[in-house]
Amino acid sequence: MGSSGRVEACGSENIEVAGRRARTGSRAERVAARGPRGVPRSGIFFGVGWSSPVRGRGAQRKGAGAMSSATTKPRSVNRTESGSADSSFERGLRVLSSIADNGSIRAGSIAEELGLPLSTVYRYLRTLREYELVEEHGGFYVTGWRLSEISRHDVSRTRLLELGYAFLQEISAATGETSTLTVRVGTNAVCLRQVESPSVERVAFRLDQLLPLYAGVAQRVLLAHAPQSVIDHVLAERVRTLTERTLPAATLAGELVRIRQEGWGVSRGEYIANALAVSVPVFATGNEVVCSLTVAGPQQRCGSNWIAEARRVVVNAAERFSELLQSGGEYSLAAERG
Image 1: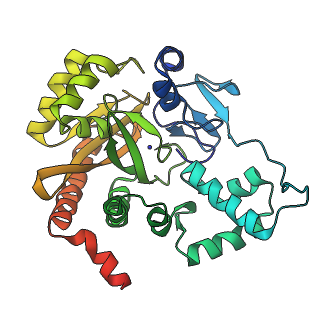
Image 2 (image 1 turned 90 degrees about the horizontal axis):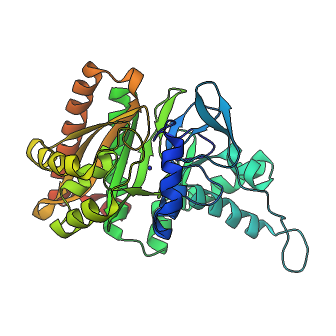
Image 3 (image 1 turned 180 degrees about the vertical axis):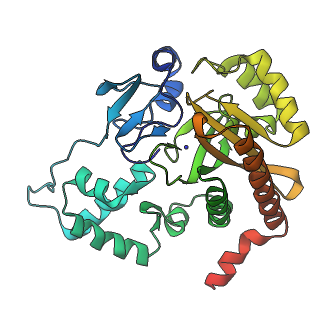
C-alpha cells in the first residue's frame, strides 16, 4: 500500500492521466487517488522523494521522471488551548498520531514533522513500544496490535497481521524486493502491512491507503475471488485508466478467470508505472480469500527469471499461511501472550 517522504511505487509515468481521473471521479475516488492530505501515495522510492502517478503541488522535474521532494505535514504550533507549551502526555499522543496518520514512518521523519528533538521522539517511541502500541520493523514504525484491539478493529485482522509479517519478511529476504499483505474492503483494497526492499530504488506503498481493485495484481487477486456482485460492479463502474498499462474492463474479466484457474497473477505498471508485481491469494477456513501476499519491484530489476523465482517463493508462503489459518493458527499468538 506508502510511508514517509518516498517516491511512489505505483508509477512515475502517466502522472497527468491519473491526475485527471482523480479530478473527474467521485469524491471517494478522489480521496483514494490523492491519499491523506499532504502525504504522497504509493510509489517507487528513490530515497529523495516520491515518483507519483498523481502529481502534488510541490512536484519537481528531475531527469525524465517526476519526483517530489520528501513530503511532510506543516509543523503545527505546539500549544494547548490556554496557550502554554503542550504537555509531555500531549507530545506522546502526537507521536502516536503521526505514526497512525502516516501508516509507516521513520523516527527522523516524526521529529521533523512534529518539530521535536530526535532524542525526545525516541524516548516516546520506547514507551509506546513497551505498551505494544507501536512496532518497529527495519527502522520504520507502525501501529501495534494492541492499538488495533483498543480501537476495536477486527481481531481476526489483527491476528492476520501478526502471523503474516513473518511470511512478508521471508518473501522480501528471498527476492530482495518489497512484500505486502493486502485485503479487500468493499470495492477497494487496502495494504495493511509491508516489508520494504533494502534497495535505494524500491517499490513502497502507503499503509491503509485505499487502492483500486482493478489495477495492480495485489488488488486484482482479491477481486478475482470477490463475490460476483462486487466483480460486476467494479467492471461496470470503477475501471479507469491510471497508466498506459492499466487493463480495460474487457481484458480484466478474462484475467480474473485466469487468476482463479492458475492461482497467481502478475502485473506490469498498471497502477504504478515501471513497477512489476507477483501476487497469490491466501485462503482461510471455508476456502475464503482473506488477503493477498505480493512482492513488487522496479521492472528493470525484475526479469523473467526473477518472476519465476518470485512466483515460487510467494506461492510457497501463501500455501503455508493458508494452512496456518485453516488449522486455527490465528489464535496461537494470543495463547502465547497468555
